[in-house]
Image (cartoon, rainbow, N blue to C red; front, side):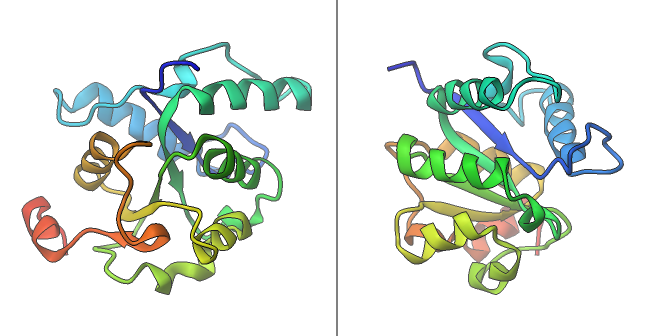
Length: 183
């Protein structure tokens, strides 16, 4: 098995690479934080670990590359916005493979949200693949706002051997949010 030290990032791309028209802008923001944070936001990007794929690549080629990236990952950041449920192809596949095959934890990151203390209140945003795995207890998920400090903590803390508590409804406590200056 490949060495699993990367973080896989999943998001709804909306069949475009335009950062203004899809959630790819949050992926680019993660990469910018990594560059500019002076060590405060570090992760090994699983997307940088093997060949690049383009939208014109064949479906099976894309699937094979995604599987390789997931197999080399210790966790997944799943960016969840109002459009995530619209993805009926790649995001559900990535969730299924991450949970069912790789058994890695998911860091569900919600842009535009404050402290998340009751993840179940966000269930209307979850793709069906995630909702099913939270309900049946197979997914280990920590729910965080899309903010640098909680994401950095979750990425550094959770992996296949250190799973979030509360199965699919994990969240940080008030003390953590106070420490990060978030409410």
